[in-house]
Image 1 (tube, one colour):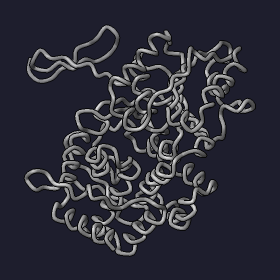
Image 2: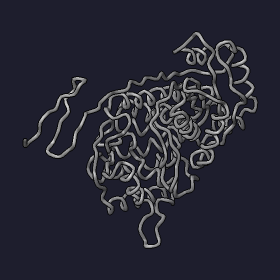
Image 3: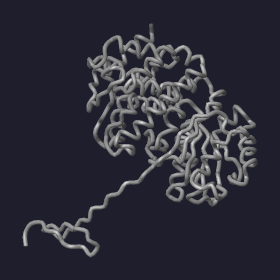
Image 4: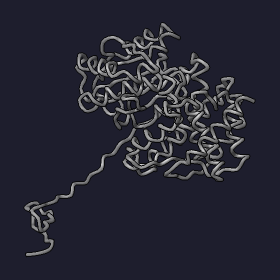
Length: 408
């Protein structure tokens, strides 16, 4: 017999048989994920029941075990924070159990680039004998959430993770998404997993002691999503740039909420929450930002690098006639009035053969995307397009423009 034919299966399925002895049974299923994101203040206050409510939301009839990891930066600012956490759990010991000691872990670049630290966290989870229904509660900046989240996603193929982001960047971006990861082999997020959290608790009280550098830096992610998705949010950022730079509570809380919701809506509605495709709209400005971080050995923070990346790609979009001069200038002006940098000498760093170091970011970005370059560029404030190549001479021109602007 020639051609394709179908053979019966005892379970009622149809198995396609080809001329060659190859058989295929199509396997397809979907997995439902849900996780709430809360906006609150002082989650470990004795009278705030939110955390307890989150921990017992799937099973109110038993005591739940929780292992807590806290960013060392928080403890530096508030040495009594671990006692506050412990007191909260002790007051609710009948429903939630704090497992062992509260673990203090380094944040920032150390957390993001140290495999041994991730393995150390995994070892602590092993010694705590947590099961898949136990909880890992991570309190900290995006680097700590990424590193602890990676470790939690690997232990038992996934222990429930609750994130408590402590920085603006983590509350409006990194902490509300579905990714975990660390840098390795000279590349940003080389090792990582897609593993949605059990819940996210954005605690505005944690922002009180945030250093100005990280306060300002976190706002870059709001500009990123506003420029390509939400003109009303950009208008808000433009009008409130000085308030944001001066740490106005109302302005920053509005910014965080709107930015976080835009990120979550993208994850929900994009049709590609685990990024199987090659388009990454929420990585606008990031091809150069990731490279800037690595070239500066993390002296340039992620938020600062994103601001420079936004400036570079916004100017590039103008040079390609996607954006008007007024729109370009509004973006750069708003970034600068917020206190975000749009220039660093690192942008002009060159390789031994005279090429710009920053251009390797395009190669790294293309590899990360799966071999096809997709760079998101704004076509108007609140609108975007994808391009599959970048004109190197125009990148040079844009860098020259930003350098001259900075000089003046």
